[in-house]
Image (cartoon, rainbow, N blue to C red; front, side):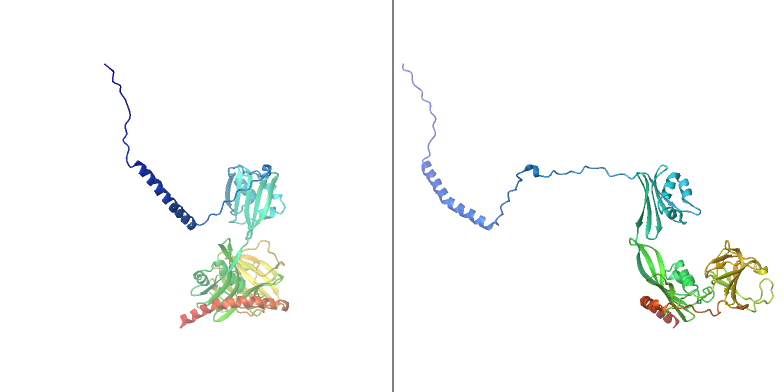
Length: 451
């Protein structure tokens, strides 16, 4: 029997549409290509053109490229030593301060040998602040303010110490205040925001020759001042001098301005007409306080209980209050005189003498024949002799005749020399105009209150 051959094949039926489909595809592609190109061109035209990037220019000589310097990273230097702020107390010296802080006295000796430093170190006052940095007993630095505008800085260096002065300038601004006295000048000043130091300056250094502030002040009196305020780095540090001042006492107006000439030869307070406010004598020989017994020829003596003339003025004040010479003169007597207790008598020339009694003690070194200046300390208030309490008994004598110290006519001071008058009028005119702006509202307020 013949074997039957087997044929194997893969059968895939052909689509009848295959050839026509291929031709249709190519035909459609041919139609779409121009359309796609048109779309691409359209979008390219709508897009803003981009500038070509500039090709970097490389140096031909690589050696010319400077090396990049990288600073080494260093840790911040930590402050060395211990810092101490020391506030100067009574009887302190730098030797005592260094001993209290266990600092090297040899370092202090080295600092004192620096040029111009010793006098700046030794002039310390209670309340001064000193900043010291030290490592154990070894001083590293010392800083202290030596004036309102300067700071002394001392630093340790390799071969010892160096000193430098740092300038800290002040900014001066004008301020003003007004007050009406109802009970006392101090109360009125405090209500007006004026410091006690400033009002004492007004009473004792400006109008103290014209007004006895211990006796003559009365309700309704008023003051107006233009003064300096001091700032450092925007921080208020205190008041400066009074630049212009007005005081109305019993209806009488007193005015004064500060003037310093360009050459520094004229410096002080003057009335608007150029006459100095200073007189030959102060109305009161101590900073104003209060009157305990006025000039009275018919006064009954508080101890003897008899009618006995009171030929002076008694100023009640705490024991130890400074007593000042009322004018320039010479000491004719210093010692004890019966009921006067400890007493000083000054001769001033022109037949004028002044007496100061009941002192607790005399100024150190005061002796007969010594010359004294107006305002110089000659003693201290006490209650020696026939006194009921601590006070100063003050007499003014003209050719041996007692005069009331608060009403006696005092000679006028000389005016500013004519060579300075134009400069004075220029400066004073501005200050008086400023004072007018301050005093006008104050005077109006007083007038309204009295209506």
